Image 1 (cartoon, rainbow, N blue to C red):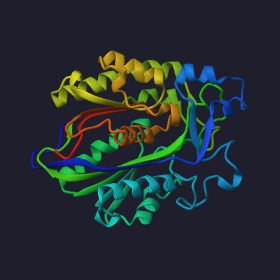
Image 2 (image 1 turned 90 degrees about the vertical axis):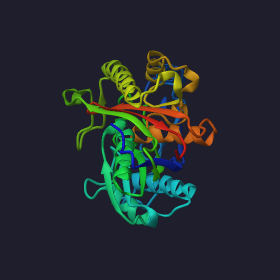
Image 3 (image 1 turned 30 degrees about the horizontal axis):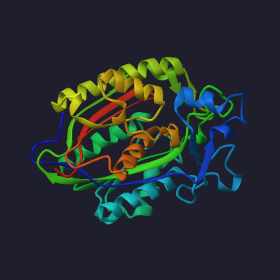
Image 4 (image 1 turned 60 degrees about the horizontal axis):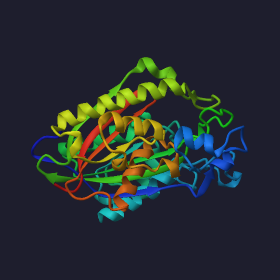
Length: 334
């Protein structure tokens, strides 16, 4: 399960975007009976960035048309995508496909990637991909495979405005979610490329564990059951990707998990046998941003100088559906 030997994909640029409104745990205590200590102990979250909801002024709420204001999924995706393109030294005219991973599109129709494509001047096609919090890794495998198939350059973005579907009356999970976007540019390189092994999966019998209905009050989640299953499927998927990549866990330089909950991230790392100092984590600053969480953590690690050419990166996530995905990626262009 890897691209063919003739050509593969490498990451050549990256970028991120967060809404300006920072919501602290102290802010959250004004909504219901909780405390900073309780939230940190259970999630590792200290603050998150909101594009909408009770802490954002009405004038700054997401606009009716995607891309028109700071609060939309499209606008966050555009900002992150533009930064990734600039870092790669290319423009939208050089991109053969835009893949926007999101579970919070701006409209039911059309795909939010349409507005992002127009703003960035993407020369090729564009599509949305919704695999919930596993979305970015699903997108990475999809994008790398399409590069191997002949597209020279793909812009991959994970962007969310989860605060538009958060039930802020639900004390059990309202504090978890934030908004943001992360993006990478994938380009064709000779040889097999940087995707060494991967695993994608879903168990549709578990839809009731985490969902949000159209027109409903917001997300509903059975937290304890999600925690239990998430740790198991993430570990199993990661081990399968490592096996397919023919590498050992001791060779992994950086583990980039879905930033759902620090306890889940630590439990997965412990079961894999990865020291916690190898975890890329931004959850303290961003909260759970669904498909944006892995690219936000990856970009943060790259900017901090935690990645060198040749380093092996293990990405793994799980989400509503219940979806899961993992991939082993070699950093650099070879």
